[in-house]
Image (tube, rainbow, N blue to C red; front, side, top):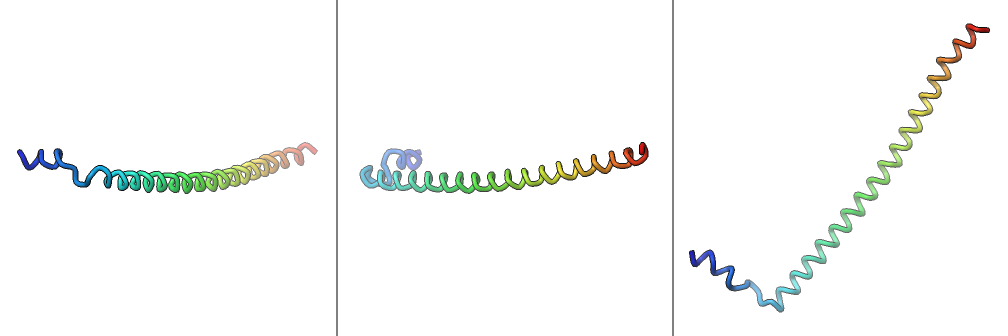
Length: 78
């Protein structure tokens, strides 16, 4: 039982040295988080651009199909 409580009572590093490491760890964490968010934002922009392109292609095909469907009707009427 004493072996479990001993690490809780004594810090591994003096607090004046540990502060530098804690601050460094937070800086690295925040930096990695910012990089990750930047990468995800770039990917999202690329996906949105590709989705717009696919939507425009689908609209073109839809309008072409609608035009082809109406063309035989006009010929029959004439």
